[in-house]
Amino acid sequence: MISHGKNIKVFCGNSNRKLAEDIARDMGVSLGDMQVSHFSDGEASVSLYETVRGSDVFLIQSTCGPVNDNLMELLVMIDACRRASAGRITAVMPYFGYARQDRKAKAHDPISAKLVANLITVAGADRVLTMDLHANQIQGFFDIPVDNMAGAPLFAEYYNNLFGENNDNVIVVSPDVGSVARSRNFAHKLGLNLAIVDKRRERANQSEVMNIIGDVKGKDVILFDDMVDTAGSLCGAAKALVEIGGARDVYACATHAILSGPAIERVKESYLKELVLLDTIPELPEKKCDKIKFLSVAHMFGEAIERIYEEVALSSLFR
Image (cartoon, rainbow, N blue to C red):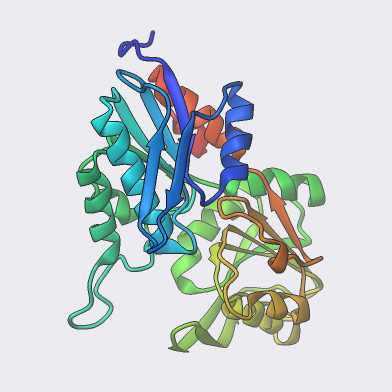
């Protein structure tokens, strides 16, 4: 029973229109008539060409690069819908930018993830739907409900089809100590054991692999992480697994394909046999690589949106 009695409307900004179209198609609806553009000086502008009064509105916008432009687009979209008397506004953010700035790493650092949470709330969003936040505690930065879905079930299905379930010749590897909990849950889904790459980070976006905890010799390994930025850590871990650990083939998967700077060249030249990513961030032509494969999150987000609208639990999607 839909207690709020509002019709559903789905809009999107410019960050990942293809994914928004795929989500709408999966839901059997059309994207709403909204134009998101920019003035010559870079200011974001939103024109809403249909009524949203009393509607349950879902705004699909990843805050990927250019991060600040896409974030501002989302804020202006929320404000436009709020001022047009939307009944409820959900910010659907497949990728949540600024998530890595979730704490004070050193004195006088900002906590930018909290600032972004405040901006989204003040703009007028009633809830947030996202996937694989870099730090789960970011959910607590919001004073509105946050649904943080997991991409692991999509990867688990993919690798079960590739290797079969409970394959003793395959092992899941956490690329660093900070990802152990995430990787352990993923290994449990596949019925596999877990190994850990222990590394020491010397400076931002650079790392030095120090040791491998666990036996990967002669095995196919699956590196599991939440995002790939410059790919230095991932490719360094793959090298260590082969050269130090004696792994057979190295596969990798991650939810968010940031792929900045030298990432593509590093993946091409690495020991990685395949890198599987989700399309929370759009695949750009200049970032294509034969080793990289994308899986779609459209169905998962489409089902989540429908469940939020119908006020049905989302917990089974997280599993």
